[in-house]
Structure formats: C-alpha cells, structure tokens
Amino acid sequence: MGFGVFIHRTDSIYDDSPSERYQFPAQYLGRVSACVGDWIVYYEPSKVADTRGYFAVAKVEKIIPDPTTLGMHLALIEPGSYLDFAKPVPFNYEGAPVERGLLNEQGAISGRAQSAVRPLSPADFDRILELGLDDTETLLPRVDQPAARHEIDDEQAPFIYDQTRDRVEYAGTRIVRDRVFRKVVLRAYDERCAITGLKLINGGGRAEVAAAHIRPVEKSGPDIVSNGLALSGTAHWMFDRGLISLSDDLDILVSRQVNDPASVNAFINSTRRAISPRRASDRPHPHFLQWHRENCFKQ
Image (cartoon, rainbow, N blue to C red):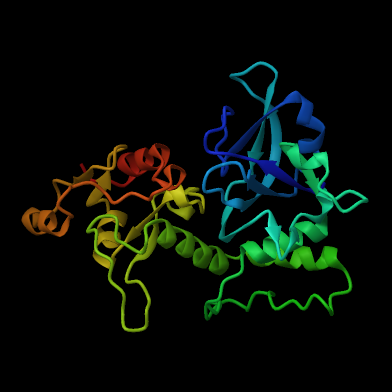
C-alpha cells in the first residue's frame, strides 16, 4: 500500500466520478495497484482554467476491469472516504512545489509531474492534507465524542508516517467532514440559499444557510460538493422531508402533499429554478437528484 496522486479534470475524456471511480488505461495498473487500501489525492492540472490544484482526498478500495471499455480499468473509491478540501492546495506553495517528490537531484521539476498517476511520499501527503483541511474555524467535538487528535506539532513529531496516519484518522471523523463539507458547499453557492436565492448573514458574520446532502450520508451519500445544496433552515427542512425537490435541470418541484402551496410558492425564488454554483463540476449531479426524487420526494 502507498499514497498516490490521481490527476483529474472536469473536461476529461475518461469516465471518472471522483467520489466513486477513477478510470485509467493499463499502463498505470501497477501504480494504481500500489494505492489499493490506501489514500490518494486528486489534482487538477495548472493548465485547466480556474484550476483547483490538489482538491480532494479519497481511499482506493479495489481495482476492476472496466466492463464497458476494453483495455481500461476502474479504481473504485471506498464509500464514504472522499472529501473535498476546505482549501484547494496550489501546485506551488511558499516558493516550492508542495509535492516535493517531483523535484530531481538538481532541484528542478522532473517529468514525473506529467504522469496521470504517480506515487506520493508520506511527507508530501501529510503536507497536502494539512493545507487542504486547514480551517480557521475552531473544530469542536460533539459532547458525546472525544476530541479528535489534530493538534500535531511538526517539530515534535518523531515519525512523519505516524503523524500522517493521525491526520488521516482525523480527516475521517464525522465532525471534521461535516465542517469541511459545509465550507465547500457554502463557498460554491456564495452563502446563498439555492431555493430562496437569499444571502442572509447574522450579526456575527455567519451565513444563515446550511450545507444539505442531496443523498444523505446514512444512505451512502458522499461528501462531495455536487451532492450538496446550500439551504436556509425552512428550505432544508422541506427538502429533507420530501416536500420540495429538484429536476435534473434544477427546476424546483413542490410536492402535492404541501398543505399551504401558496406560501411555499411565494417562498421560492422568482425563477422557480435553484441557484446554481458557477463551476459546472460543483452543480448538483443528476445521479444524486434522481435518488432524492425517487426516495424522498413526495409526489
């Protein structure tokens, strides 16, 4: 087992779905196989407009031959492991590549940087994860849970490998995943409710919207921004109870079981379409919207 970097871009010719699978040709089978049972970081190349750099972490569960494309394979992502970074990490950080393993003996970037799949040292993985999950907000544990081990001093940690595993364990806790998910979803929607269109900020500077999963975590919904919506309290309550839903084109659907349809229709923004994130990859994925309509929405 070992860490790795998987290059992914939204306009890729490959049949990728970062939270579920990564498609790759046979030439990378050895490198991907070395990552099975371990964690990888997704990277979007710098030549992509508005690149996110290193933008997410996930765990590779297994590899299977692609049943639809001869000569291709799929790296299947362990359910529930994918997590967008709270802060996308640029290729260069403080004057040097954040992925130090790409430097050759002369200190220049080697040809390894062009590889779609490449190994990642524990030290580089740890550095990227620390930067990607950095959040200035205090992360407080639930009252029924012990505090996560996240106060790690690099100068005092004698083994970088153990330090890395602590950070991976920390990133896997539900409280951290919920906080990071909220941050990336609210950022994608500019802290605006997708249903009402309102952007309300309280006196403390906190947005009065929540990050809602379209397909809930307890129903195998991933912590990916395309499975999220920024919703005000009332819209969140109605969405979770199936009183409103969305079409694949983001038309707002109102259940016939709503007891006050006039008030609900007045509550919805005038376009009757959900507010959409700017980035196409952040928009609600039809796969998750279909699940909500079929399993939650009250027709």
